[in-house]
Image 1 (spheres, rainbow, N blue to C red):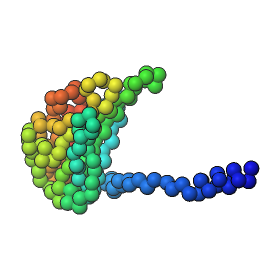
Image 2 (cartoon, rainbow, N blue to C red):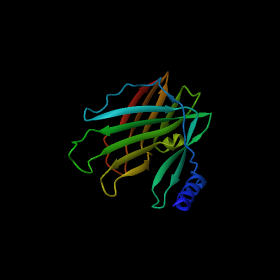
Image 3 (cartoon, one colour):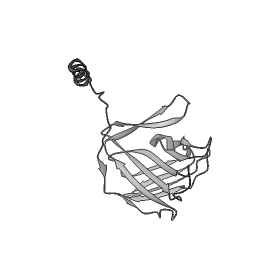
Image 4 (cartoon, rainbow, N blue to C red):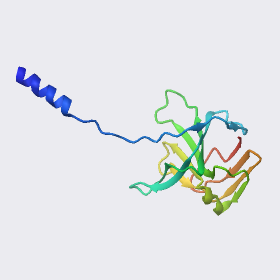
Length: 169
């Protein structure tokens, strides 16, 4: 029995945990959602300072963002989560709008294909086969002027609930 206990203790103390890297960025609290959140859901706006988006694709060739450190830019992430009945299985529905802007820029205007200069993507997450994931947006308009941000866009790949966004910061 002592040998068994000694063996278990040796194995326990010799195991090493795997170190994982986490991406922690400061999130600005100085942003206000000016456009109304849809009554059927909750909205959250995050501004990730000193952050950039690196677009990647997974094994299924689906697009997804990876956030990396970059002191000359910041990422704005808007999340809409639809309120669903608790008893409904697989009834979650969420949309995200993510883009990157220069940290010190006070005036910007991009339209249609030029929206990819700010790496604008729209994410749709639900139990909707073949119509979920992140999608590049190339139709719409982004304007930033005097601390006001206005975004109107269309996702031509999947249906969407969120198609506009107004922020002040």
